[in-house]
Image (cartoon, rainbow, N blue to C red):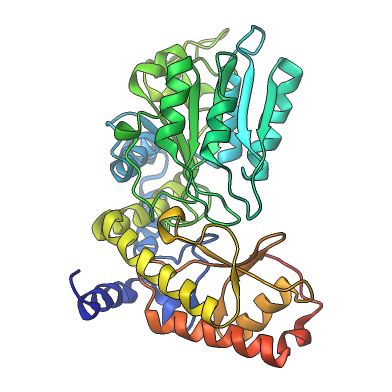
Amino acid sequence: MTSVEESEGWARSWRSRFPIVEETTYLVNHSLGAMPIGVREKLGGFMDQWETRGVRSWGEGWWSAPSDVGDLLGKIMNAPEGCVVMHQNVSVIEGIVASALDFTGPRNKVVYSDQNFPTNMYVWEGFRKLGAEIEVVSSNEGGIVPTERLLEAIDETTRIVPISHVCFRNSYLQDAKAICERARSVGALVLLDTYQSLGTVPVDVQELGVDMVCGGSVKWLCGGPGAGYLYVRPDLQEELQPRITGWMAHADPFAFETGAQRYSASARRFLHGSPAVASLLQASAGYEIILEAGVEAIRNWSLRLTEGLGQDMLERGFAIYGPQAGTERGGTLTIALNEDESGPAFVKSLERRGILVDHRPGAGIRVSPHFYTLEEELAGFAAAMSELRSSRDWEKDADAAGVY
């Protein structure tokens, strides 16, 4: 994309694949990515197969879906084949990973920041009962966690660093490579949560040297809910034996052996029960279009949009919460509000104007364009924000509560 016209044309070319953008200014991709039209075909095929093939469907793609769809997703992060498996969500994934670790010895520390998504904290806090010591690294004003502060916390007593690649509140882009290098130097593991980055920020697991990566498909990957993913470094897989397990993790599941688990030698050892096939198939439609568009191109367009919007909002008297430079953010721009302004009310008022964003307490209005977003849509959002502030029309929705 070498010119304004070419870039805008590239973005416009994707819009027919996402029906919601015909009627809505869709700027909430950090929460739920727009549904690509390919999802209907995937789910229709699933229903046709179930209807006509019945139980034979398990041997015709259903059983292998967690691995097959995982391999497709793996292409987005440059993962070797056979290293990604699919789950329902990140809460389950982090629990499975935690259950594979021993916290009874001197290497029992878990390091993460106070900007991690809460569900991840809840999971790891539960392992205090099994000997885990939790060190939460504090952020600065604006929710930014200095990399140096994280690196100082990672030492020879650290078992694992389950850290967000991009912060959900302010889109701060953590230096994952530096964290991985520090952890490796002291023998600790890194579990990188790419929920808010994969699909809009380039991620290369081999270049990063990261041990494990997790996330979900509901946001930037445009894959909808119910399709979490876990990457495990090839040479690490056989070292870990999750206590949270199930028959799909067995080396020979249809032998129906009783007694202790006999783990698969592959990444399938991190599976548990039967898969939610429909969710995995719908997610694959999102992965396909992300691969088609290319994450590098998506990132370039995202930076152009968010940097332009950030400048516009500053000129209108608004403040940016979190990183000021686009290269230090993921795909989201968070707009701070005044103390006397209600985030949920602004969100509701914008919704009435056909603009979808959301709000997070202590941060502000989160705005997330994607590769099908146009610059004119962001100009419309900025104008609406100014109008709501000057007219205080948002007060008509003062009773609104955050629901997404």
